[in-house]
Image (cartoon, rainbow, N blue to C red; front, top):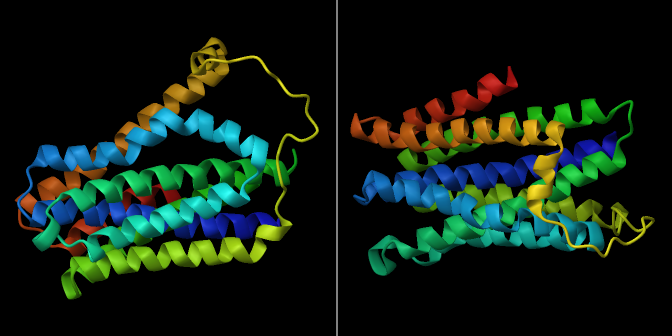
Length: 258
């Protein structure tokens, strides 16, 4: 279980960097006068590439293990947080934020699939539910910490300080991962016979139980994304500062924790 807790720790830190960048990017856009629909574009780009590649990422991780995918993940999230710092709005306009959202969203899907695969692989029937509960708790903590820290850094520093804070979370997560990378399995499915048949993602919907899980997950994700969109837009409209908006966003994760 100790190894699983270390995996949960680096996942939570990378998640904190990811969620921080989402909040900062939306408030950054609103601060520079971008309309609400552009905030929607930003949030959708965080999910656009993962929606297209997630199944392929899972197959890729099954073949080569998690070391390279997670390394790529924290490098992408770190690069995402660096983009607005290196290419500020005043000189380069809004496009660096779009690149940030694409990099962070794509990078985090590697962490999420790799980490969940590791937790399932390293746990057994007796402690698997407990292991995934720890992951949920850790994500709730990171999901509530990221927006609050981002809000304070924005209000008491600048947006570039806030992106630097998100970068720090990502680097800490990457550091924890690298310290234990050698002890992780090279691949998940080495002992299994290779299946050379081509499968469609839509085959998952043929299994009723899997279909129900996917639909439930979709509704939960929609609720999360809608509040992540509406609270910054409405909060900015009524004059709330970044700290207040960060606390409002964090209550979603605090309630998940509870």
